[in-house]
Image (cartoon, rainbow, N blue to C red; front, side, top):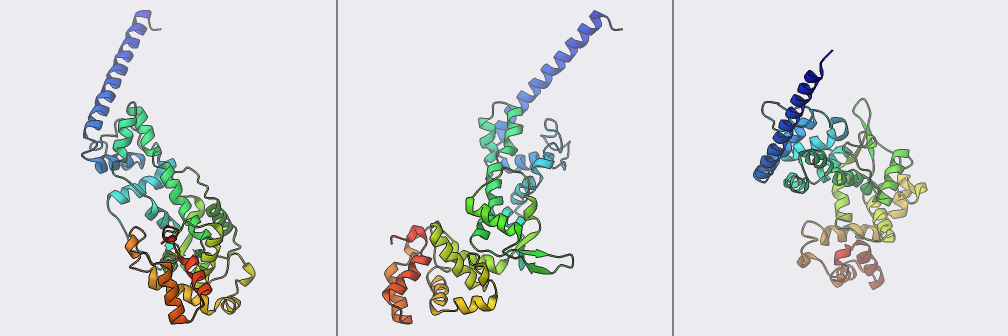
Length: 319
């Protein structure tokens, strides 16, 4: 049995080691803050490699103070996305785009995020916890983005074991879940892709068409419904708000009208490649659009004005 003197010596040595360890952490954190603005991407990548348990302990400065793989289960997907953005990886999109790719592309990474967290953190332990958590909200909104697109009319697809893609019914429970989640705009803080995103895809051609109808859109529920119907008709798909019209033949009979066709023409002519939401000089006036519709397509003023109201982005509505 150890004597009191031996126990006292052991406690003293332990206290000395703790003090040395605390001093090293303070010194490391001081050096980190001094160099963080010079190499933010490199340090961020080092940190995330420890999270993913792919770090080289001899080269990675965080290996000594952050347990390797300690956050992998909670933040694995988020860490991979940020590393891919730092490395500049940007693969071409195929005909069908997985929702996980939509989320990753929508997520914004700012290279000085690590600097901001370091300067507001009280100490190293605070920083090590706060840094990965600082991305949670942005990632949650990125995970919400596919739901917003579904609520605006995007069609879901899934791939079977043979690699064949098929359309997902608007009555599918996951489609309904995403549609309503997009409607209410609810987010859930997370560091990984939600399970329901991993088996679904959008068609790339639908994504491109969607931009023409919804870029810069911030309208009310009524305008959203009108645009959603016009978008679904444009891609020859069923009306979400009227499931009975999902049969394509009945849909074409219902929507193949001259006014519906002119919606797409105005979208292409005035809100296509030359339209920039941030440049007022590219915003067409209501008179420009209505005069063109009346002179070239014989519309009444009321018909022309209705088309302009449906398509006009909110930021350009008063021009």
